Length: 373
Picture: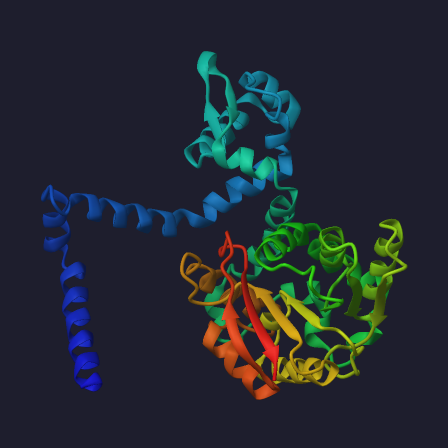
């Protein structure tokens, strides 16, 4: 019965595809008042796909030129904005009109321009702006996506994440880990807030953040749970940066940073809560399973593991498949996974009792909870 239903659905979809591809039907759907709204929405979606790279470059120009900062105190004339951005008035107007079409800026009375709704949101989110400024590295690699898919070129983004392409990542020195560690630290606050709002860490005794970078998440967790002890595991050069952050935050009495290769070295024991934040989708299946098994060996039955990262197929975040699929391709390792694919890996590693937590912003991250069996 199920096979019959699947066959019937496939034939129905094939008929739909032939119909939508027919130019006569396309013209008819635009002329018909009942189908016109749908046709226009799809035409707009097609425009967004075609022009998406230009949209992102407009956003990047706004971020690099600090347009949102310039408009933070209110609307300004084009000449005032041009002076602040060190652009000609013609170039400034071109940028402002492009930004206004994307809700990054907004036309105001008297020929002035102010912040648009999205521009104001970016102004209040420095973490998101740090990711915007990072994007040109990816765009450079995507100049020839077919060559990237065929493996005919080595993506430069892999050099930005040097641990992804070497077998002895512990040998990385401070200068090699600094760029990506700084980016992760800058972008981590919004992920930390999302995760900590979705899951209450206060009942736990010891939180271990594996691949925890400079310790931004643990500092945020410490503020939520004053009695929580903290452990961070990352490469030695990264862990050193975390120690400095813990010291600056006066957390050295309850926070430790362990310099280890989390795939190959034994992990610290005793944690009743472990977090993996934007780590698993950087690994292929073999390495992901190595990591999960390593964590399972370090914890007692009943310990909680939180996988915190963008996941494939989550409702409301479907386009992330395109972004993370190509980002991890350029990075040289990993892939976005569906929740059930992550659960399959967790089950092989000795975890169960899975639960996808509800969180406010799945386009930023999803949060999968598992228990050590």
